[in-house]
Amino acid sequence: MGSALMALMAFVAILQPAFSSVNLYEFKNPVDEQRFQTLTRELRCPKCQNQNIADSDAPLAQDMRDLTYNMIIDGQADAQIINFMVDRYGDFVMYNPPVKPITWLLWFSPVVLLLLILALVFGVKGRKKATKTTEAVAALSEEEQSRLQKILKENP
Image (cartoon, rainbow, N blue to C red; front, top):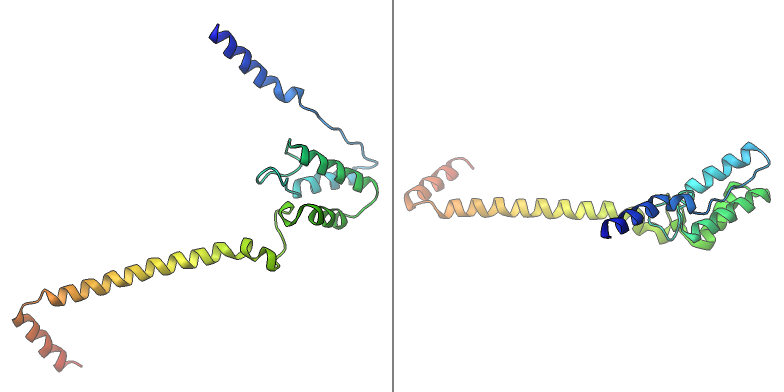
């Protein structure tokens, strides 16, 4: 009984994409269709993490595809469509958001984080070197220390 249930669940899981809704958009010309394909690949779904609206199955992505289609049919330019989507959903819908004060964290935090890590690594490395040098000097006998002082006086 358990294996039959598992087989049925696997079968349903395999067929699930076949039952998903597919929207076919009709365009007046191939240029508009290409614009639609390009725009839907350039715009990110706000609900899905790092997935464009062309590939997302989220209802929000479907709404965005419908809006894009209607705006192309109405004759709006690509820049107008992108500006509308950014105004409505924020800079997150663009894969390359513009550099402006509100997006500085997105653009510059990786560089700042890398510089902080490098400063920490080299700072700790420098401290270890200084500690080893003072430990080595402290480990010298009195005779070795006097010889060292004599050498240092002769070669300033």
